[in-house]
Image 1 (cartoon, rainbow, N blue to C red):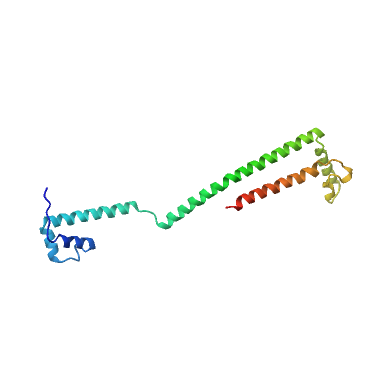
Image 2: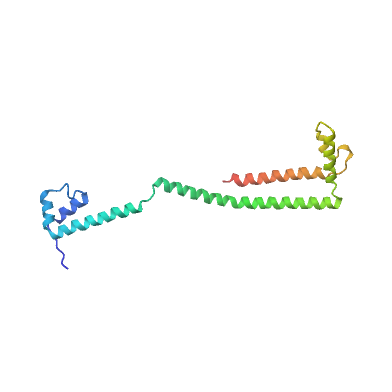
Length: 176
């Protein structure tokens, strides 16, 4: 194979690089490319490569930069959410375990005492039906001479668990 060079090749390359071929070049240069094999082959190959390049870029069609940035932000937020949820699940499991332990201890204690709190609730409902007004004194365990202090410890204990559980969730989510 023999490489042929031409004296007008530099001018043809310049016109192709600037994008002026064939409309903005002189009639003499177009006539030379039609007559010269090396320049004609060079123009044909360059135009074929440019057409293939335009087709491959059009086929790739990357999404706009704004869409890429938005997807990256969503991925970052999702990863942060997953990192935050791990301690929350641990705190929720701990709160559930403490609540179940508290419930089991209360039930065991009440079982040993004879489950007297069910009778107290029945008395409260009976007294509420008899009177037309609701009195807060009926909720106090020592009202009416009752000596059972089960609910006196049960209600504040449950309230304390709810308060501490809420505080734990608040502190875990505050460090986002």
